[in-house]
Image (cartoon, rainbow, N blue to C red; front, side, top):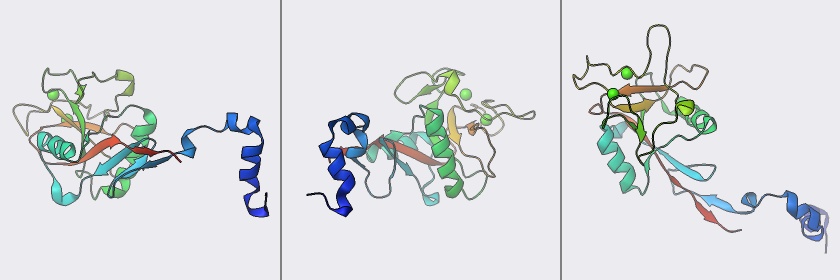
Length: 183
Ligand SMILES: [Ca+2]
Ligand SMILES: [Ca+2]
């Protein structure tokens, strides 16, 4: 029986036409473990300032948590992460490792799953003085083969990636697929 409070649900089930226009996904519940942030169908973990690690160790930490360093696959995902880092970052150097490296072949950036960086979804920082990635050798003669992201103070335009020596310690963003529960 339809009551005042459940009129929408009654319409939903009594009118087959409605079910076509309702996507399946909102009927399900995506879930992340504690300390992970849900976005879309992924869970993200932003490591604390007390746990800065070199890139390889950061990756191992993510894997221990049953994930991996984040792979950024859309402008929308980049925007979401950049927004999150605005609240996470304390100062401009407080950036986060992502799952992107050119340690195998200089200048050939690949994600941790082996797929090459799509140049239309590359968000390297660049201005008149500084074009990233620059493989800067002053801090480490080996150059810079790992990618980190974050911009504080904020700048528009999504270009928040920098290469840095993989040996340097940074915070990191881990990612894993959310658990989808059928509603
Ligand atoms: Ca490099
Ligand atoms: Ca650099």
